[in-house]
Length: 313
Image 1 (cartoon, rainbow, N blue to C red):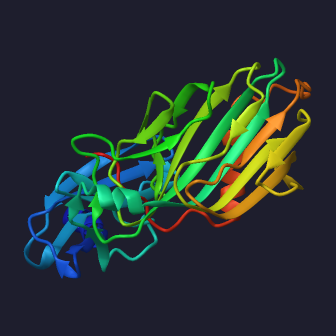
Image 2 (tube, rainbow, N blue to C red; image 1 turned 180 degrees about the vertical axis):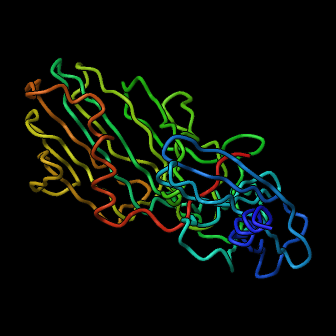
């Protein structure tokens, strides 16, 4: 009897994630749903199911493991080859009324043309040899109710500064950073192309590159309308002159000092730019500093939303 009670107690305490896959306001049956777990040391898929009538699904959550430390669960739904993310669920959160929204897809060039940049943050850190490390966070807005897919080829791109090299899109996986995409870009010629689907609403992309020492000018134009543009230049820096970006103002975060420039309501053909002389060596090597402080700046402005965009399934 004691053994039976010992076995029954954990079963009774086990929680179940009860949710629904929704498409166009209605339940979507027959959609593959996967449960993921992220802990301090591990991450990955731990279970899966298929949505039933009305789009409903149930997946048991593993028992709490205090030794794992930080733990968060989230579910994804794969519809038409696109992975959509549901919100994060912590061990103490309710596990009912969970919802994942999926959308129809399109490869419409007209929709691609309508995508705008709702926010762009550019971080420049001068190197001791006169080169510049540049990190960018670009937030694209899909104004439609359909997911834009890059098939059979990418449809969206942004211009990269002439002379830039060492282009690299970020990598990683964060369940608690909504709509922040690591990777999903490839350089072809003088443009960076977005290779992952763009779901309705906003989605952010991280990437970085380097401007060699012989490059002393950086056009800050994307070729599409931009609602808000921030440019951060780490101090001490070469003598910088900005065009179309205002006069600049001091800005500090995590003990680092910057000059921050701001422009709003930029048209597709706008051409703000930075020119500088140099080098003026900083006291420490700032390699990749631009992206190192980007999260702190954006988190302070409440940039990250409550759920993350999808990654290619």
